[in-house]
Amino acid sequence: MENFPFLESLKLKAILSLTPEPLDDRLKQWTADHGIRRIHIKPEKGQKKGAPLQPAQAKAALDIILNPQNTPIYVHCLNGAGDLN
Image (cartoon, one colour):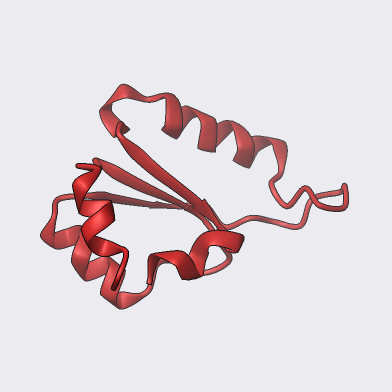
């Protein structure tokens, strides 16, 4: 919860999570309270080591990121999942 004031200061429209599991309940409630869209893409094991996104998933993520209706957007992956709590 310590990062919520910082995230609130960004005036986000969306959070894109590239994580195995969707956002936890506290973050779901916080985003709902602040009118922030939650988007979750579950990475699938890629063919290359260290590349967890399939090409179609990477394209979907880029489409979301580049859509002006979603900006400003916060994007995080498994390495940053704990940072939102």
